[in-house]
Image (cartoon, rainbow, N blue to C red):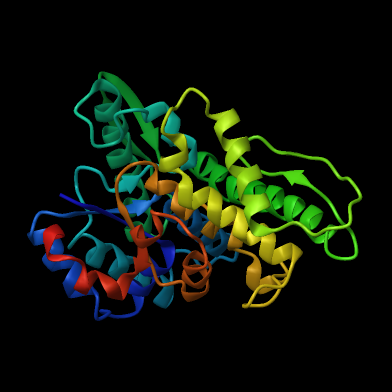
Length: 313
């Protein structure tokens, strides 16, 4: 049984037609595999809904029909037991068993994920904010209030701001400035020291510093390095590409086209628990291809799911 975790761009495409990969997902679901939305999907689509509401467009016209179509098509393959895969903030509370474990913690997470997904799709279908009340292990929970949903775009922006602030520090270290730094962001420790030297940072140096910071922050998890290897190595590669030009050029994280890079960097954290991450973001996948990690093949283009090894089928 394999869990495939989907990025936001895949879900959005469902609103505009039936992509070639749609039938592949439906077939894999019939074969017993599971599909869940990455935690960031709910946040990004909620932010989109709030933006439409602020402009008086939520629940009207083609946009509303698109949301309904999206929900109809998702229902053909999204796992009813676990429709939302845990994001970075939920990884540690579920350790070591994970979201699929038949434990009290795992069961509670799945119940809450189902309730959040139900509330989310109820709003998409209705074109307005509606509350969904559910009982989880004897406790009553309310999902879908506008006040609660407003935390989603706020969290996304906080993540972007932290990412950009860190990357600006990296930009400041471009030649002729020289520096050493220990790097991590969000859940990981973040610290930096600057020393003048006669050499430039290399990718292995940035990677080692990032992995070391992660191990210090997650010292209670013996296998943290293997679980988050791709996430940290990708973060290190991105820093390197900001500081120094690579064979794909030098990244400027302040441009409009790079606005979602902070959100893309969240995708590999899903691999903390066993899954395959699927996306349509070619530029993100190009970056992943530059990273030497045993987990690299666990992130793929959605079209590649049609050719996954037969052992998974």
